[in-house]
Image 1: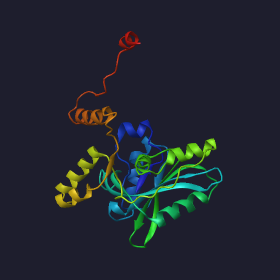
Image 2: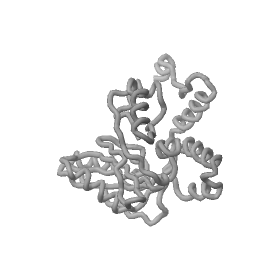
Image 3: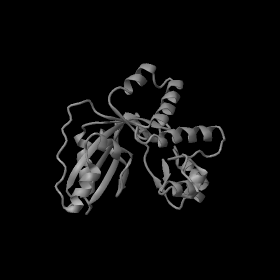
Image 4: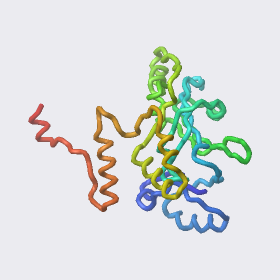
Amino acid sequence: MMKPALKDVRWLSQSKKKVLKVATPDELVTTFAQYSPMSDHFIIQEWIDGPESDQFTCNCYFDRQGRPVVTFVSRKIRQWPPGTGVGCLAVECRNDRVRDETIRLFQSVPYSGLGYVEMKLDRKTGELVLIEPNVGRPTGRSAMAEASGVELLYSMYCDLTGQPLPDGVTRDSKPLKWIYLRQDLQSAFLQLYRRELSLMQWAKSLRGPKVDAVWSLSDPWPFVVDWLRYAGVRGGKARVSAPRTSRAAHERSV
């Protein structure tokens, strides 16, 4: 498969694809010629067959000595779009292989800070294959880690300010799930239509405690606007945004 090294404005304005799947060398050359005006550099990776549930992620933080202070592993359940998209339903899990490979990767170079690695199990070889690394920033799974009691950002803050690190987390409850509801509905409906998923399997996948990627009772507007914006795009309407208080109204209220 082929994907842009950086999705800048040229790529985003002309394509919504995350990766481009190619099957032959000739198809690779043709695809590169078609998409090369949209990006300066491309990454070529082997396509790893297998279900989305074979994909794992590990969020972590390494201190200034390169020691792992905290780690958090999750497993993907669904993604949107299916096959080559971004995770929309995931669950925390215990997988020491994923954790240990993540630590080994980051400790192979002098590194400190936030880290993230996505891996997939290659069922042909039984090996974990690196799909995508990220460094220096929180990712979507960071919110899932925080909701599970794994303090990624606070651990970084305490380490950098010389304060005691948070206590370790021991969970006795069911594993927490992370869901981006709108995209998970899109993914599930498409898989139901293709008969790749049954209603029973879908309902079972949603059981257990969850944290939503967008919804918050204390700040519901991002969730509402996300749905309205999607409806507007699908209906060819203008962009929808949350209402704002005008400057004049704000000045009167001060």
